[in-house]
Length: 185
Image 1 (spheres, rainbow, N blue to C red):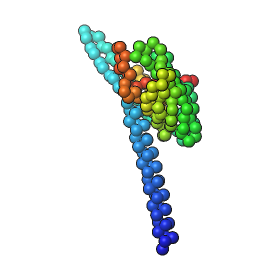
Image 2 (tube, rainbow, N blue to C red; image 1 turned 90 degrees about the vertical axis):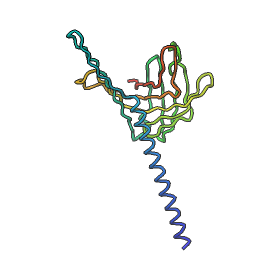
Image 3 (cartoon, one colour; image 1 turned 120 degrees about the horizontal axis):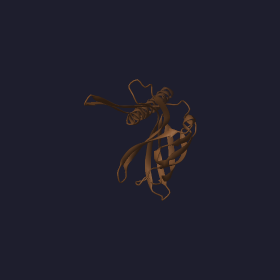
Image 4 (cartoon, one colour; image 1 turned 30 degrees about the vertical axis):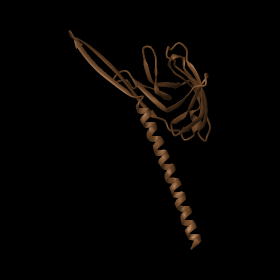
């Protein structure tokens, strides 16, 4: 009787652990999709004046990239404003990274290293530690970003890391809520 109770208790623990792991995976996937969607946008305007038709079209679609082997995310990524990020990911998802992001004057990038970095699904999380010792959380998603400039354009796909700034980066003439680091080829 005791043996069967112990077996039942052990099976219940295993089931709860499996359910918890599955729930964590689902949460990671849904968060990755949510972040990727924040990097999507669409604009289509048509103006006609004095018989002249002007059409503006821009469509950007971003989808998270879930790799079976987390080491596939390792590499060097580049963004606007002279910013870059180099990341090395182990098979277990632990990562080491260093990089830079824009400053308020956009003149020179602010450097950081990533502490306690981890890749789970397509999400990268960790704590940025700046050269001056200040810290800030980092959350990003590995995405395929497809950009189209006309309705008939097949689009150009770029793989990279989309990083969300919370709080946003504020400069003299801009507010930056996110930054896309494209993989360096």
